[in-house]
Image (cartoon, rainbow, N blue to C red):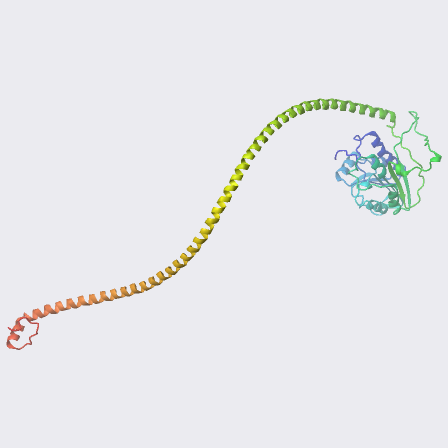
Length: 418
């Protein structure tokens, strides 16, 4: 279960006044819970449900946080008392299941708060009653420096009355205020008489100055609704104030000690501040020296920049001259390139012609080689024929035939005359 935030009251973790405010509401409701079926919507840790269960027929405590509902069940395990987890805007109960619905300090926490009122009317029996409380927005606006971060919608008296009257024909709104009182009691006394001072000439009580609104709503007329005074056992206001004053004095002494420590710290900070100021002055002096040096350097650089600008202008003239020369040479290069391309084309044409000539030369050489080989073959054949002829001419048969005039004599015979 989470720590106390001021919105979910946990016994033993709140101051007495706040605790009594919450107990007083349940004491107010308990008078109407006798023998009834009661729903405590938004029951928190369950102390109020347990209080009403002592006299009611049955009490169901409803809490949206499942962990808180389990803690309530463990803490207040009693007959006629149950705790369940659920949403006040969607009550998990049938129509007419309860005779009394209690919803203390719940409605201001809800988005869609109308659902709580509609569901409460649905689960109530015909003579059933809703007792619901909420803080007065006007009072809280004056008493708080900042809005309550846990409250979604706070009500003024007229708005609260209108919202309840739209759902219940009979509405009584009690004004809850934490007031001082003086009690005379005996240790053994159980009964008490009360006297509430009133001023007949002052008229009715102004609801806009009230701390809280506690409304009793029903579908039928509401009876027995006199003012109600809750006096807790811790109601000795002077004693509680003395304790509170003692606590405040202790806190004041602690704060005085903190103040002295803060003063010592402040003096130390002042000394450190003076040292820092001296250091800052020295740093400022050094910075001024650096600034002076930089200004001199800037002046020198400015003169150098002027010289540089003049040089830039001169170089600009040179660049423009070179640019014109470059354009002229570029045009010459373009013309030269055109001439080169023309020559390349001529060379390519010559190469093509030369290739044709070379091809023809190769063909001629091949034909010459063939004819040379043929001529060489003829020479070899002539040599063979010459040898054969010489052999024939030198043969005895030829000589005999030649002498006998029987064989023809070739003109190549060297011995033809013989």
